[in-house]
Image 1: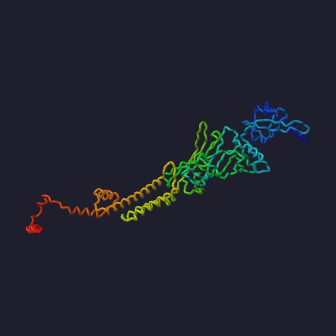
Image 2: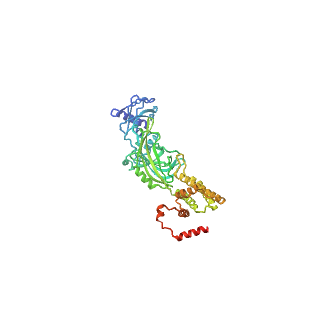
Length: 484
């Protein structure tokens, strides 16, 4: 009986207020539900109470607790219990329009600090939809990140592996409340699965994301959402290895939405690029052989067909630390080449000279085989250090060939008594000696003495200037002639 009188009271109250505050739903049919001229927001409907006449066709309804004017429409079903004690009316299903209210806020109960569970649950039910009151207005998403570690660079597969702390900000227009009415609570944490999140990805990503997932987000009273996540990025990068191991690599990280175009999601920087670089240098823990130099970047538009996507491209510039490769590759190779040069001071006729050079060449070949894993190899080109090793190997081969030729010449010289051909003597002692800055004092002395032994006939002027021969000189000359 009490339920019946409650129903009668609400019905009478609704009829009294129809004349002053009337919402005319013309021809709202319980089965088809068409022709609504005014509507309510999805968040407001969860907190509003509707009083409608229990009739087969509900034309007039009044919403209590809110008086905002709706601005857009959707459709929603509501059930109003009409069965009361002593009455046989069935529940009336009234289909009304759902509008968008620009200033919808979460409700807070007096005994609780923060938004109530009922008001939050009404927002969680709409987590599949972009949180905006006007779908013609895009959602702004701000991005910043910190490079925590450079895990590795694979030159053969052209892959850069980094570990990032990614931070996203966006506006959730349904998660707003007044701190004064909610126990001065200005920020709460919510499960990430229960609210809408932007589908921001790294376009260069080529592997499965194996990083740990963050289960919660922070939301303040203005609807600002902050989402921090750890991201292990395995991205493709065009690596240049010509200057290995003194190379500098420039790899890009492009952040953007995979599905939402510029009409739905707009991207921006949460921090300046200089601040992102300073944070990365401060918190960079693991870099291995790589050193972070700078970070550059800015927003851009990606066009594909008739659609456009808002993206932000960051250029991460890293430099290799060459100490490991200088100690393990360049210095040992230089020592082997120095020993090969010093081997020229060994006697040419010694048989140990050829065996020493062959051992040196074999050791250098083994050294290259062991160090092959440290050398990068790609289809783009050969690094400069690879050319250096090839030249060193070629010089060792030429040195061994020179030893073989000298040994052969010396062996033939012991079997034959013939003199060295003039062209060979000229080529070796003149051309090759000047080429290697070598001078033999014996050769110079022989050439000087041979020049001194040559008699130059006197000229007429010299003959006139000579004194006349003495008689004793003539007698001595006759005596020598007679003896002969």
